[in-house]
Image (tube, rainbow, N blue to C red):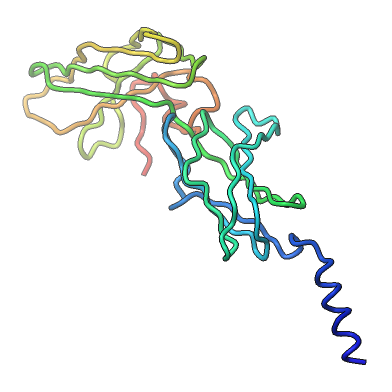
Length: 224
């Protein structure tokens, strides 16, 4: 009886779909999920007993469930897969799909506009600042709501320097500003950094934060 059952068991095993033992996982390398526009993350995962092609699906903000196929790779002999460069153009949910179809859970990648920010001392009371903010074609910002803040060493709040400043749109998706920023007067020197924010920035860019919501206020508290 045992000798008769063995071939049947083998036959049943052969009839089970290859994805039956598959539990698809997905993650970003070093759990990095915050990037600038134009940069990318490395996405990897495992597929359990499954060996074969893995397709990456991406649904960019506003998250209507319209996942599109981005790329396809094959697993190695350990059931591991890697997408070395995944670069959404704005906040996105990504997931992996194998035959079946079987899908991983979705993870979110937060994309911030690309930027360049330079400041140098112009004189005792001023810094000279030049900056640019950019995104994909069609990227827009409210140009007249740029604010610059100072954070002094050991301070617990960002201090606004002046009022709103107006950027110029140099080309599609690119905004620039340069000028002098007046610093608070002091009889003693102090160590500081300058940062910026744009009030009423469009949704779908970066992580929502209390600091961004407070953009434009005189002081913004620093989170611990």
